[in-house]
Length: 218
Image (cartoon, rainbow, N blue to C red; front, side, top):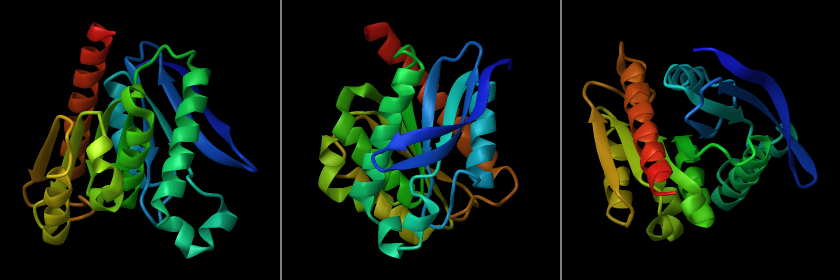
């Protein structure tokens, strides 16, 4: 992979600015915004590992902090799905301007960030081509699940039984093309050997597949 752009960026979001890391491969086929879970940040080693895989698949990535450090000190903000989704929508519009609208856009959400990704996808409709959830809490986007149009891939570890059930319940509310994949032997954080790389492989395949479909029908 050769890189056309790699830098730390500041994303205006109303009265605050959100720090992010943007990587755009030279022949990028699409762009993926990451929504991290509670207690995490754009520095999440798991999301960065997935981002590296996506770069090899010629996908641009934007990892950014959904909240400022001051906002994170109020724990209610960390679980405020509408607020987090609005920040993701804002970053999406910023990225579209940054890339002159040339790249199809998708989301990769982890834990509570998956709810924000699905909520934002419902708000932005056909502008979002695909969503991937890793060990996510899509149930927290319950009021908006039926409005999600983007094809959605839900990935859960086999040992994460409670989250599997929450994902199944959320999946039943989705009206978009969707799939639930359970990774054998994996827990909530996919720390087992090879588990996170399998998540990344599935994510890259799903995103590129639906970016190509969207490009063909545009």
